[in-house]
Length: 66
Image (cartoon, rainbow, N blue to C red; front, side):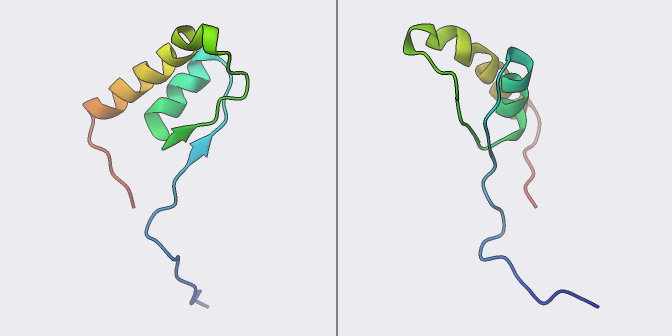
């Protein structure tokens, strides 16, 4: 049996709500967006540093979407 359902668009955006430096870094590497649950503007630099590192890693390799 084969499914006859087709998605409305080729790729759905993936947003992750992660906590912790390593998880946020991985989010920057693999996801389309980050949902910051424990965000405090006065700590923005510390919170986004791992995200920026993950984004840098993502840009170093080819990004392929199905």
